[in-house]
Image (tube, rainbow, N blue to C red; front, top):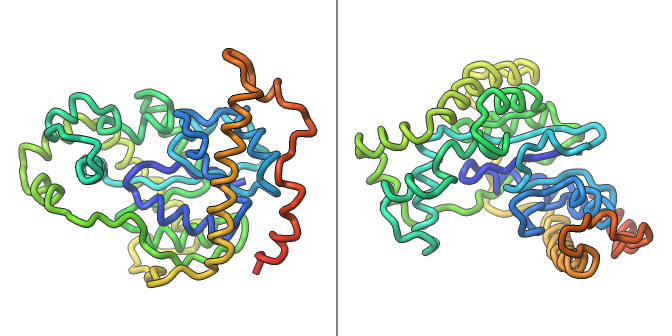
Length: 289
């Protein structure tokens, strides 16, 4: 099973779309649980809802190594920390969820402080984050997105159509441009992301070149672009998206009726509770082209 830790503002949404169009309703978007942490009980429940579960992907796969999965294929994308933080801040302003200055946001928003390390470990444990990356079967770098996709195509546990359409493109980059041109703001961003800077250097200088060589690729080579203007395999992709929305509603029912406060949702669920999964194999065969 592919376990993709989706770190904010790293190109992960575009990468996730590749998984979704290849796996359809076998790809679970874990953010549909609307929880901060996707637990082992959540994984077991998803396995009963998604037929032939082949991938889980989300922001809430915190400390992914805690999940007990047979034959896991760990994957993630990293981005240069200063650029990632500025992009994340700009996104929050453009969405209207943040009215604070960049300096104030660095002081109060945990996602702008060593967030890549935090998602990998559940805290600010650099050594543990490095161990997770060493365990990863694939690590992509946003700055080398197409080369990263080439590596993934070579190392993935099944053949993958790598063509993608870029998603969530900022409509206005003025905030980002202004901050990137301000040495004081850049230094402040570095100060708040020392662990992420060290982690990124470790990934970019040591692990990514190794994965390139393992895939038979030159880490310094210019990679062809897999970006297209339209999303192919649209039917399978759309079916997977709809199925994930259905999963969200089923999860709400499960949480409300099978998860009393303080209880274990997995323990409260009858083993025969297999919503929808018995109806999807035929559809999956039709869509598996």
